[in-house]
Amino acid sequence: MVAGTNDETGTIGRAFDRIGVLLRCVVVGFLTLLVWMVVTDEGGGYSMWVAGAGAVVCGVLIYSLHVCVLARIIWRPLIVHLHIIRDKHPWVSKEQRKLAKEGMDRLLLELSVGRLRRRISQDPETGSVQKGLDRWRGMGSFLYCAGYSMIVVPLVAICPKCEVEGSALLNHVIILGVVTLIAAGISDYIETWRELWAGATYKTPKATKPRRGTK
Image (cartoon, rainbow, N blue to C red; front, side, top):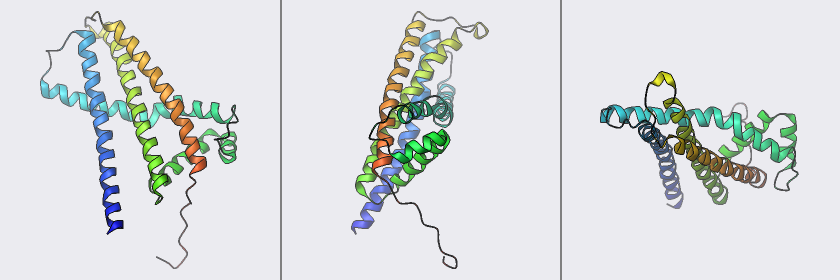
C-alpha cells in the first residue's frame, strides 16, 4: 500500500511539474503580448482569440528557444567553465574537473545524465534535492524569457519597417528587461553551483546492461 501510494504521489507530482512548464510558456507568451501593447499603444486592434493564440504560440517558441539553445550556448557552459577550470572549489568533484578539461560537452552531458538519474532515484533525499533544483531552474528560465521579451519586443517595435509608434514607456521596459536578465543570470550562477554540488554529492548508480539470454 505504501509503495503504491508513493508511486501515485510521484505520478501526480510529475504531472503538476509538466503543467507548470506549460503555464510558464503561456505566461511568457501573454507577457510578450502585454509588452507589445505597452510599447506600441496598440491594445485594441486584435481579436481576443487571435491575440490569445498568438501569445501561446509565441510563449512556447521563446521558452523552447531558451531551453534548447540559448541556455546551453550562452550561460551554462560559460558558468560551468569558470567554476571548474579556474576555481578549485571543494564542492566540485575531481571527475567533474577532469571532464571539463577534456571538453565542456562531455561535462554537460554528464550533468544532464546525472540530473535524469536523480529524478528517478528511489532515495527520497536525492529526489527531493533534484526537485528543488528543477524548480529553481524553471524560475530562472522564466526570468530569462521575460527579459528576452522586454528587450526584443521594444527593439522590434522601433524598427522602421514595423511602422508603429512607440510609447513613452518603451525605454523603461528595455531597462526593466535588462534588470530581469541580470537577475536571471545571478539565479543561474547560484543554481549551477548547486547542481555541481548535487552531482558530486548524490552519485546515483549507472543502469546495468542486461545479460545475454535474459529478458
